[in-house]
Image 1 (cartoon, rainbow, N blue to C red):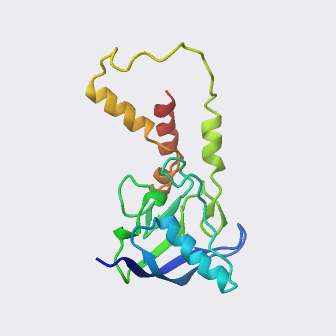
Image 2: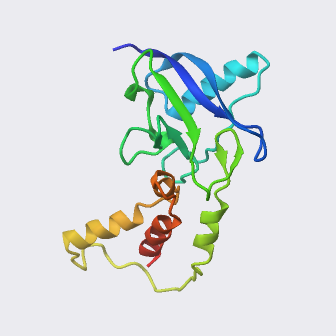
Amino acid sequence: MAKTLNLTLKVWRQENREAKGRIETYAAKDIPVDASFLEMLDIVNEGLVKEGKDPIHFDHDCREGICGMCSLTINGIPHGPERQVTTCQLHMRKFKDGDTIWIEPFRAKAFPILRDLMVDRSALDRIIASGGYIDVRTGSAPNANNIAVEKVKAEAAFDAAACIGCGACVASCKNASAMLFTSAKIAHLN
């Protein structure tokens, strides 16, 4: 298997909320197969900056798959082709040399585009904030083996807690229903 890839990127570019967006084509050359998707974009941006061009703007934070900021639609799929993997944890070895990759921001009314691949996620933040967090001292945590939990219940609890609040459920819904996000967070925070 090749250690590097040469790819064609079709990237959504938009200067601001009011500007009309467009798809632009970029060559991504000599991309290491072990690079993450965001590292690949970093490499492309380094080349653009060296050429005196405007880099591709995209959101990221933890790059560990837990914050949900890397909200990109890759080849028409929120976060890309790998199931239950965020964009930042998607590695270039999932693509083939010569592939054309379409990269767009999450598409939903709840996510107005700020610039290029960056979206305003504040609508989801307001949903979480309206939940009314409280802090209650409940003493120290019991030993994990003191209370037996049925496997089915443990798996259901993990599934609910696995939501990182990225909004991929909204972006992948044909109706862009924020109720998917709301119900996930209600189950998670309950």
